[in-house]
Amino acid sequence: MLVVLPGVVVDHDLAGASVAAQDRLKAVNDVRTTLLQAVGGMVVLFGAYATWRQLRVSQEGLRATQEGYVTDRFSTAVDQLGSDKLETRIGGLHALWRIAEHSARDREAVISIQAAYLRTHLSWPPAGPEAPAADVPINDVVPLEIRAADAQVALTGLGVLLLQPREHSWINLSVTDLRRADCDGLWLHEVNFDRSCMEAAGLYHANLTQASLVSVNLRYADLKTAILRRARCVLADLRGARLVETDLREADFTEADLREANLRKADAGGAVFRHADLRLADLRGADLNTADLRQARLTGAVASENTRWPAGFDHATAGVIVTEDPGPEPPPLLQPSGITTQHPPLRSVP
Picture 1 (tube, rainbow, N blue to C red):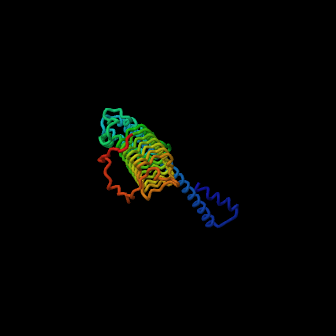
Picture 2 (cartoon, helix red, strand yellow):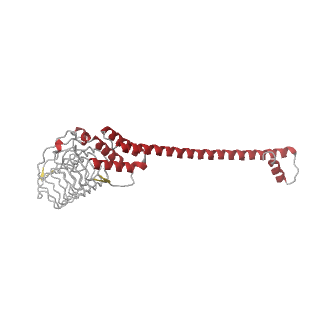
Picture 3 (cartoon, helix red, strand yellow):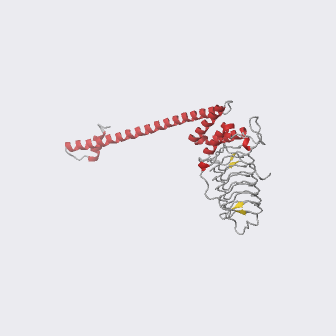
């Protein structure tokens, strides 16, 4: 091709015209150079294509290897959850947590496993011989991270993984024993806690947006600066709960028991307290401007001049006592630890 073809091309283009031998030789060399460049370009393109194909094959092989590795790790971690040794179960939960952080395909499965682990290991009312009885005073109940460290790991992992983008909503943690559980700062958006016991649970700065808390026991729970926006707290027991500076906007507290609850500086715009029991509650500085307080019981509740009431609502007739505002809230670092807190007896009877 490089020896014969250039001369044929030149003779064809000359169409029989006579030219000097030197000019013809230059024309043949020019054609030969062009052909060499074309062949070289084709070789480069072919090499690039071959390299790309090899890279694709390597990537697919690596992906298959990684999938097999993740599957093996997943199976091993799940097997560890059935171990009789606490440390082995904790290791399995941490392994699943790590898999979910690095594998979006397995995240939903891990979240479902963690929720099922909590429901089966912390059923309410308590069924296991080691679980504290339902009628044990809350000050005698050991914090969850001590009495069931594996369950606390599962709960923490669940609250962290729910921060990631998800395909499905609503996690089922209903009818679960979460007494004195540590949920501080966890993301519990759209979690179903219906009929669970979360007495004295630490929910400081937790995100419970649109969570379902129907008939939940939240007595003495620490919900300071938590987010309960659009949460359903119908028939919930919140006696003695700490809701200081909590976001309660558009939450539904219909028929909830909020006696002796601390709602100082809470933002309850648009919240529903219809038929709720707010007797002896601390409402100083709370924003109830657009709240629904129809048929709410407020006898003995404490308010201040900074408490905002719905238009036309007569808090004095409702039995609210106006006192001085408490001033700024102390920083969280000065708050007592949830593990060591001793809760005083409630003055209100069931």
